[in-house]
Amino acid sequence: MEGKTVLITGANSGIGKETARDLARRGCRVIMACRNMDTAKTAQEEIINTTGNSNVILKKLDLSSLQSVRDFAADIVKTEPKLHVLIHNAGMALAIRGAKSVDGIELTMATNHYGPFLLTHLLIDLLKKTPNSRIVVVASELYKLACVNLNNLNPVNTKPAAYLYYVSKYANIYFTRELARRLEGTGVTANFLHPGMIDSGIWRNVPFPLNYPMKLITRGFFKTTEQGAQTTIHLAVSEELNGVSGKYFMDCKEATLNRAAQDMDKARKLWEESAKIVKLTDSDPKI
Image 1 (cartoon, helix red, strand yellow):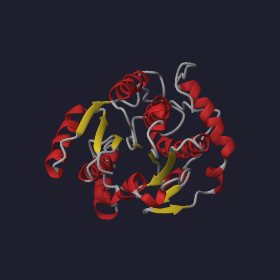
Image 2 (image 1 turned 135 degrees about the vertical axis):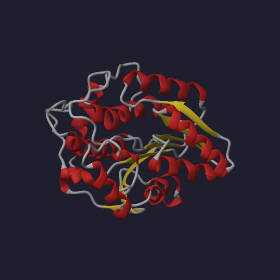
Image 3 (image 1 turned 120 degrees about the vertical axis):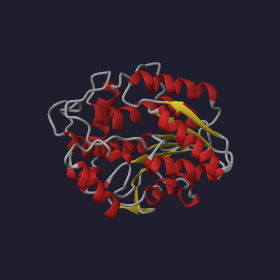
Image 4 (image 1 turned 60 degrees about the vertical axis):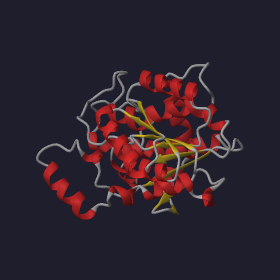
């Protein structure tokens, strides 16, 4: 991985930060794409100090804002000659019910699905011109607690906020499977994973009084962030996965999806509707 460029969203905390640290230690050029620049700057300095790799770059990205995604992608395309690995790690859980992005999209779905969907499109040409590039998507086994309603893909005020996190992870699965299908023969692979239940910042929005018992549960039974990052790292670096695409992984091993998650017709329909919601244009790169 020495000298390879890896872009990680949400690299300022949790498993994203541990993934960035590991890849920096391997000699990668790491681009940390983060919304909170204060915590990101602290994380960047820590990673540089602990790995000795100064080639750790920090850039602003708010995945919930379509304009922020476009501005960020334009900057990456302009400044980076290659992109070997794109890791969709950033995510939010348990936001306030009814919260919307600046574009009027339900906030959890905007951050966890629509932002990554748009970003992938805008960076796909850079990935295609980089030999053997990879896309890694952090999904979740919690998809089994939900379903994707193709008739309501902007579910503002219609579902509990926690449930929409599960829906967004289901959308990640459909997205990656359809992405892998469309990328066949391009040299770009796309795989997705369940990191395990992690004691990380994604649970910061759990409301009082549930926040205290949640802290006890995460500390006592969940994986550490370092443990939780291992499958992401595996998908990014393992030579055994050269050419492997469209697969689901858990604990660094291929896992099985339930039958509903294997429905490629629904995956295609979600893709088509997502393209409308993020307002892809004829001039945008095609996948």
